[in-house]
Amino acid sequence: MISNLLRRSRAALAITVATGALIAVASPAQAVAGPPTLAKSAFLMDGTTGATLANKAGDTKLEGASTTKIMTALVVLTSPGIDLNKKVTVQQEYLDYVAREGASTARLKAGATPTVRQLLYGMMLPSGCDAAYALADTFGSGSSRQARILDFIAKMNAKAKTLGMTNTYYDAFDGISQHGNNKITARDLAKLTRAAMKGSTFKSIVKTYSYSTGGTSTSATWTNTNLLITPGHAYQTQGAIGVKTGSGSVAGQCLVFSVTRNGKTIIGVLLNSTDRYPDAIKLTNWALGAPAGAPALQRSATEPIPDVLD
Image 1: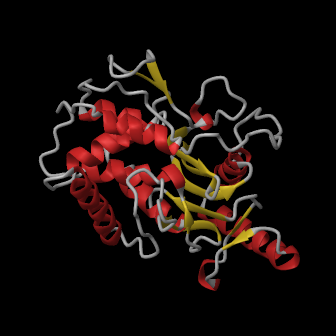
Image 2 (image 1 turned 90 degrees about the vertical axis):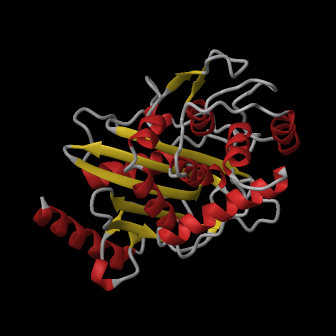
């Protein structure tokens, strides 16, 4: 397996030198290449070892939109004495915020009392910014809502520092940056995701396609925005186990994904792509091999950036 990877890496590197068309890592000591993508930044990591598999501008700071919620979830799940069954009262401000920002929503109801576990599903599946707000307000410290939110964001940045995310700065709990300073890199997102996926609760949430809201929402279920795990979709990918979508007018199409096949797991990040799912599938098949009988991949050119920020 290792020798095959090395032979393929050397061959891909030779093509890179000749054409400049492939993703290549910056360090000669890690001269690995992958297929071309439409993303401004892309990074592929071995989910077990953390080794770099492919890199395209992986240290360029960009907005990551709702991929920010991966960190929000990790801060919540690693909070001392976390009680996933704790009930949280939904405030009208959370709903007003979503309306003001035109943000993606879990359609929570004011006065409802979902559990922390339910809010995590509401944040990570439909990318609910109302659920993210509720979690930040609950797990931040302070005598006012503003103080609690600022404290929670400080915890996000502290966690980033402990994970070695040296090119990341958060100024929002959900990716909606008021001043455009919520920046991350594809490499840092891969580091974050690898750490988060070590937690069984996080992994269970992000690989879930649909989840009953238990009366916390106006709809019967929440469904995952990630087409890689959407049953029956053309982009459904064998072995995909999450992780998070994101999009916005500045951020473009973003995607953090993880796939396991034949005992090997990869973590991929695409920032500011114009066709994120074909990019993700190409990287996956390059690293893990295409499944038997898989159809030829077609560019969509039809997936617009949503009207709402997600």
